Length: 409
Image (cartoon, rainbow, N blue to C red):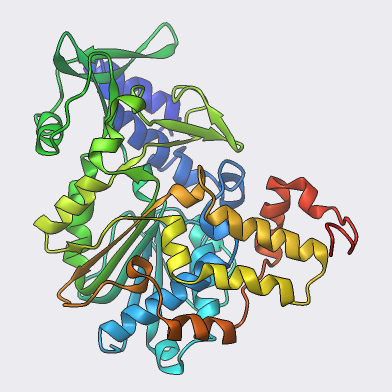
């Protein structure tokens, strides 16, 4: 049997139906087993297209380790305490969390069972010391989990339908193929669920406005709720609540393509070689969660969430860390990146819970004085070789030593 290229598969699918939804196009481009971006791109290659919070600085994983320890306590210290990370990619976040957990409560360390899940075999070949389990799977083939299901920049990569308003009616934007190139065509929606999603959120698009709707959120949230017996769901991603996401000032929509750290202009070029994402509708995530038994806490920005958990305490400690100027600058810039307005600091964090009557966790309500005091006694997370290479690629000047006297030291 001939192994078809991704381009061949796309053209054949379109030829059979004249057009396909953008959701079908995006699913093939990102996840087709023989040529999809996430299934065939190596971890090092994909890191060349975008930066994520775990790759920016290990303090992100350290703070999440502290948060997971708090969740464990709120659940009355179960053993095992299972953390499932779908979309784990290279396993960087898993490594950072489990590494910092070594400095936390001994009973928590012994209870922690971390399962990194990804559909790509790149996870199996990524570096690691055996501190977490690796599972190659497209979904969540687990059940009865007591603990936390944690995802970082996963939902933005779920396939989306694209819609617009034409002559006052909702039209779906399909993908066709003609004269050797992909093109967009508009037609009636492929499913009434698109109209229902917008109506349910009280959203009215303007004439000509484009928007992305992720119907896969329904099955995703349902699966997560089914896997989780008791505990938390922690979702970190870029997106907005519906009234903001579909407002007029996002008139062209939020579909984005990334290639070598550059925002690319079209999803129809370099198929399988560039990332395609769309901002997450957190109103849908929360409302679907309520349908399937997940109670949502207030949505926070990543900046507020991390600072509530004490990241600024770690930042202040850099000044007395004994590091050289170059290392201090590199660590400070990377930490600031995690909370930078207009960047990762604007990402959203949604905490949901199931079968637990717990007050808001510190990431939502702010850390206690006891929590902050403990941070002063814990090891300071610092850039290592795995993170520093990415840091210097993003900020080449961070690799230059200005001398211990600059600036005004």
